[in-house]
Image (cartoon, rainbow, N blue to C red; front, side, top):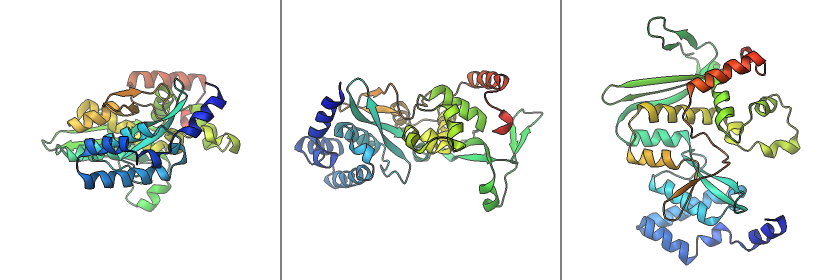
Length: 299
C-alpha cells in the first residue's frame, strides 16, 4: 500500500472520540457491559487514556475499543499512570493500518494474582549492587542482604531482579535473574529490542533524530519490562492462575477481535511472551562473553 493511499485512508477514518459515540460502538459497549453507569464510566476512562496518547489516536478505533473492553472485563483501569495494562500502537504491515495491541503491565499481573485469593504475598523488586550474597552452598539458592536505607539504595546500581510469592497454603517460590541475563532475554525474544543499540542509548550515543526508533518499553522502562518477565515466569510455572489470569496471560501482546478472538502481531512493540529458557540465556551469555561483544564485568 503506497503512502498516498494510506494517507487518504487515515484522513477519512473517524477519530476514536467520534467513533466511540457511534450507534455501532455504543451497542457493542452496552451489550458487553450491560450496566449503563458502568458503560458511561468506561467510555470516559478510555477516551481520557486515548486523548493523552497521540500515537494511539492514529490506531483503528475498533482495536482500541476491543482491547479496552478486555481490560474492563479483567476489571483493570486503562490509565497509563497506574500501569495495569496498556494499549500499544502497532503498524500492521499486512493491512497498512495502525492497530492497538493489548499489553499487560506487571502491576496488572500482581493485582490479578492478589484478586484470585490464592496469594498471601507476591512482588518483584530490583536487586542493587552489594545486596546479592551469592548462592547457599547447601541449597544452591541465591541469598540476599537488602540495604535498609532507601535513599542510599535508590542510588545503587541495579544488578538483577527478584520475584517471589507465598500462597495461602504456605507454598513459596523465588526466582532471580541478573541484569545481564535479562538483557540477553530481551535481545533474544523481543523483536523491538537490540542489545547493542540499548548500550548505545545508555551511553548517550544515539542522535536525537533517531530517538523515535526507541519507543519500546524495553528501551523506555527496562526495569518495568524485567519485572513483568519475572512475574510471568514465576506465576505461569509455579503459581496458581485464575481464569482471569489465564485470559490476561493468553491475550497479552495481541490485537483483540470483536468476537473475542485474538491475533498476535508479527512485530509487536513488546514481544516477551516466551517463557525464559534458562539454557538459551546461559549459552548466549557464554557466547557473548567469549566473543567480547559484552563485558559482563561492566554490566
